[in-house]
Amino acid sequence: MGQNVRLRNFFILLLGLLIVAAAALAIWAMTPLAVDRAEADPAVLTANANGRGAETFTEGYFEHEGRTLHYVEAGDGEETIVFLHGFASFWCSHIRQMEALKSDYRVIAIDGLGAGRSDTPADVEAYRFDAMAEHVRAFIDYLGEDRVHIVGHDLGAGLAIGFSMQYPERVHTVTGMSAPPLNVLLDLIQSDEDHRETFAYVERFKQANPVILLVMRAGPQIYSSVHEPLVREGKLSVAEGQAFQNATGNPKRINAHLNWYRANIPAPDEVTASDYFPARGARLSAAALFIWGSDDALISGKTISALEASADDIDFLELEGVGHRPHIEEPESVTDAIRRHIAK
Image 1: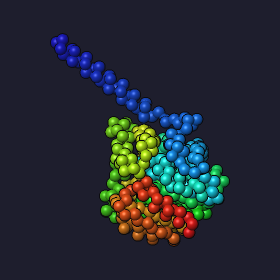
Image 2: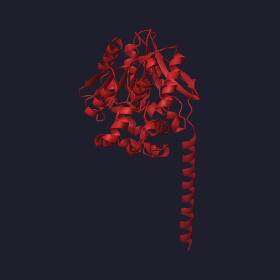
Image 3: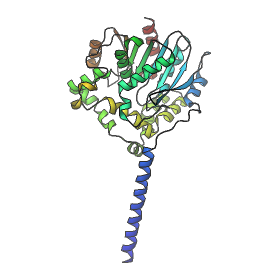
Image 4: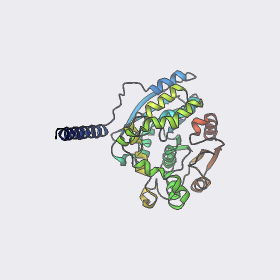
């Protein structure tokens, strides 16, 4: 009898502890992330420590309709290049291009909504490409620029190309890397079984939440699978690798960044006309360049054909033996291509 009482008390205590733990995790998951804007971004300090030339990197914050973006800039050239990163990354993914181009151009990289040191709104609709493109347009106004060159990678490429379709009057040139615009992607995942299989991971991404990401140790996994190999290969310095780990390792921020997928890429059988950005059948009129690696499983010949059919003036650069991050894996080739494209 005494043993049964002890067992019952043990299980009651265990249940109580589980309830307390679950409540604590729920409160943690719902608590908004805060950024101390008076504290310098460690990645900016690293960039300036490693930088060349007189131009230094500075950072700032821009608020539009209650949502704040963090950005980093250098140079004071007559023309401006705006860089948009992808998942799971932040502004510093374009540091090689910014470093090489800052002596001739004003170069500015944005932490996308949910990423880096930018805001992480709970409202998924805030991450729709049309809303984020409007934020970028307002940011260009804030910079005092009529038109810019815009460069994007991964989901940042989808946003950059879509922005150029939506606001062609604000764009000199656009360069996309490693991902097509949303219009092309949605058509492909609806019509092509190979693309459905390739992008099936998107539905898995969308099911995540901060607690799952914490338990699965998503932050360390992202670093070990994406950024640590680049450090070992000498593509990123140890300090830069640490900056990536710090910027992309928080499970709540990872979950916020995943809202880019939740807001913009419905399941293939659920796509409607309203999901296209800027609109189904919209064409790209700005001078465009698309760069991808031959070893990138996300890009196929069908992707390139669809991109070519949707654009009035587009050039292509395939880098042999390069994967999904050509701007980090082969930075000199990417930078030279961007420079030539802008000059053209």
